[in-house]
Length: 428
Image (cartoon, rainbow, N blue to C red; front, side, top):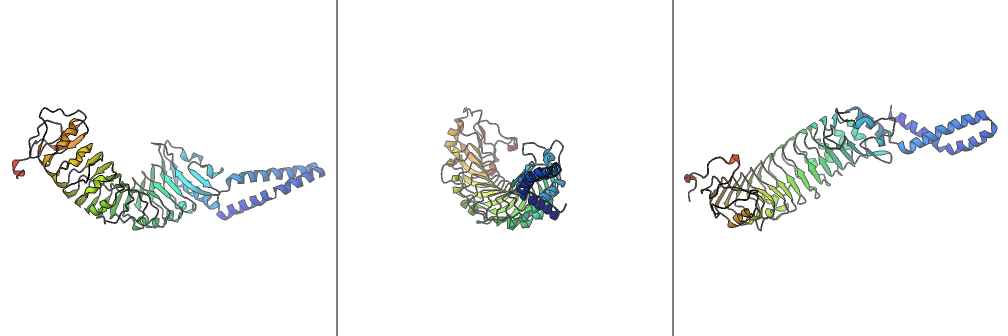
């Protein structure tokens, strides 16, 4: 059925509705002229009344109507799902599950049952999606949607929310997504996407959330220019290269870049991100120092483990971050007493030297510190009684340092069996 044909049907129906009042008056005259004419007129009246009542709630733009038909043909319910059962095109499409309309246009399309553990959908995203010109929101729940992301999505100039996560979308992220100048949220996480992150996406002025984690993306992280960006999640990809000091906006509150191949220093960049409340740079190849003022940001979880960060770590004030993981780096110098207020502190596998501050012992014995991992450093002592009892809910590991641990504690299996470093490694 062509768009032209649908438009003619709707026009004819509208003309029929417009003449309804005239039919009513003609009907009144015909009643006086004979029963036969009365029956014909009454039948016309009922047809017109039905048409008007139908059109009052179902005048969907013909282009949107045909686009929904194409989208429906390309998608199927997975076993256990009946989401598409309501997509019966003999009824009003604006009443379909996941379809939301304003006037005669589709403005939101939420495909799939949003309830947790629902089976979801399978199939491809039809290019007809780009015909829904008023679409502001497009989401697809976890399922088995495969194939590439249609280039036609870039035609949706008013799109603000695009979320297609936990499916099997493959291929490159279309460069043309940079045309979606009103886009606020982009979530393509947990798919099979390859190639680089287009620089055009970084130029989108209204972005607040970018979630591209758990894909196979490569290349560098492009600069993000949006001053409203609050969340950037690119973890579990194959991204490489370094981050320029001004490549990310200070509006960021959550930054996750773990499990990539990123390199270079980040101290100047991090110094600018003073609104962070979550930071995970773990399992990369970052180098250089960490700015002391980072520990005064409103962060609740700081993950910097398994990099090549180096130098002393000197917070400017008492650290109130609940969890700090600096393990498996090249940090050196003395352990700052400013860390004694951290609940879960991982400083193991570094080059820290000197005595463990006494404030750590006091807080450990009062169970204020839950985890204190100091193994595999070059520490020379800790002032704790050999008879001291470590609270059951607290964990302390001191092995493989330049001292004999004064108390016996349970350490992680990965800490190994050796209690102290060889004397040859503890010179001076």
